[in-house]
Image (cartoon, rainbow over all chains, first blue to last red; front, side, top):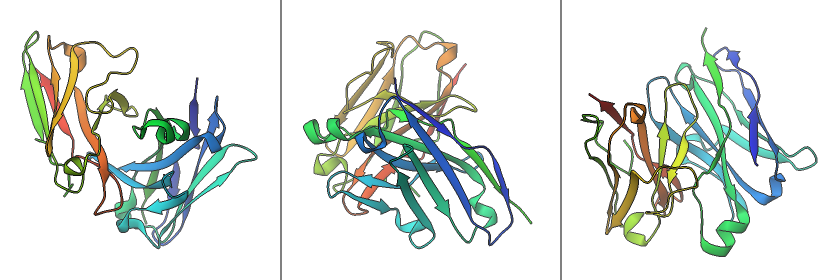
Length: 125
Length: 111
């Protein structure tokens, strides 16, 4: 049973950075393709970026390139998403979401079947 | 503005059948990429409902079904129940954008 447990809510000022963590249990991080999805209040889901098993690299949505960094600590099976130069409109719930790399490699499976509980990041001055 | 287009809302009475459309393009569905569907209840994380166009994960009722043809996909819910009231999202991969994409979401109201 895979579980993704995220860090707690954050309050930040515009211009600051935030780093959200996502701890994996039941799998190792290297067995998963980890992604980050955000949801602004009352809005839809927005893919921010994640590990692309096709080429073995982390890729970012164009909207966030230059401001977001996604990293992984395989010693603790924890993924991180850092967003810098925060704006008021970055206020959102940030989710980690993943699929099995093995399933992707064997049959191209890339549905996000595992999700963290979400982390609310509030940006206000 | 998402590359996958969904109606903002749909509604139906208990017991009825509703469908939610998801319109893509040649760079996602038309290129053979699969569509997945998620259900999001208020205040919770999304839950995978349909994967690889037509398949239900274990535990998802048979009332939910998915289909895909050409550059369009749809989610059908039969025997509508009050607990189905939620937001529904389609999702795929887009080769032009070089990443994963979600539809804008559809709010289902059970009358």
